[in-house]
Amino acid sequence: MITFEGAAKHYPDGTVAVADLDLTVETGRTTVFVGPSGSGKTTSLRMINRMVEPTRGTVRVDGVDIRDRDPALLRRGIGYVIQQAGLFPHRTVLDNIATVPLLLGVRKRTARARAAELMELVGLEPSMGRRWPHQLSGGQQQRVGVARALAADPPILLMDEPFSAVDPVVRTGLQDELLRLQRELRKTIVFVTHDIDEAVRLGDRIAVFRPGGELAQYDTPERLLTEPADAFVESFVGHDRGVRRLSFFPARSLSLREDVVCGDDLKVEDVLHIAEGHPWILVIDAARAPLGWIAARALRDSPTGIRLGEMETVPYGHTFSVETDSLRAALDAAVLSPAGRAVGVDEDGCVIGVVGQDDLGTALWSVTD
Image (tube, rainbow, N blue to C red):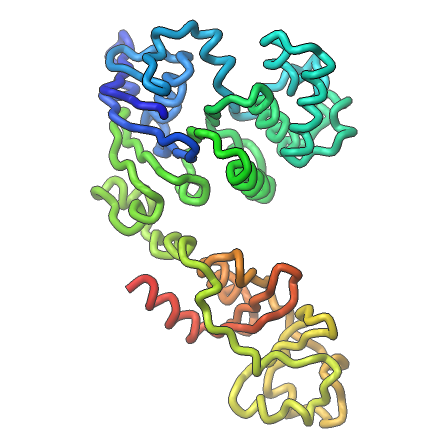
């Protein structure tokens, strides 16, 4: 557990980076510090490992005042991940990861074996261990940075905007990886970001900082979205916070239609009755993989003997997982679908059913009312 008790950081020129911070970071959870530039979130994070010394107040780790710990020893027991990974350019990937264990006196062979295990854990190929940092992509470098921070198996992991320098697609993948790792490892993670979407996705608790280093609200992501403490927090989380809130409701609560899902081996005459009540049908193959939508009017204008697999289909956009995705993912799939309908699949990608915007709207209303 990490506790801030009236912790503050003032600079000689009068700048207040952090103002009297009282906050408890729960053990085994991910706590996200979020806020605009100059709000003190990074300074607060760096107080934990004494990279920044508080002007007044106390920071404790498991009840021990950090000022009673040797800074170097304290930092070796706390993982630290920053932007651009901060890798040593003159060391291979494997030796970068092995850095802290080697500093702690672990034999080189043992440290490298541990580094190889961590490479697998963060999704890096073993062959990358012999490469130099400049030979890796930005996303790969960040994975190495995470592996290096985990090398000594620290109970605490500090992450200072680690994914902000990579493109959105890579960033999403790194977020997924961090969520997976946290499910396995249950570290005490303090994560700094300026992105409220990233905070909501990753955090068990979120601390919102306002300019001047003041803590505006410390809450669960859902309460932050539904009950912002004041106008600043409401503005910071955005006016689309209702849509973000849908991330907390599972898609498996939806009622999916199966009667508009038809195999590609069926003939037009076999499905014409569906066209009377529905504007679109979804065509699937023998393995129940989605092929695309066919409009009802196209069915009515086609020869009855033709099979659905021989007809031109409209792309279905993207699917959502009924078991693991949220209502937000289902809504996104429906909005991006040319048919205005979302395709729900199981873990193997087989179609379970579809949900239209009207039915989805009813479900959304019921959970947000």
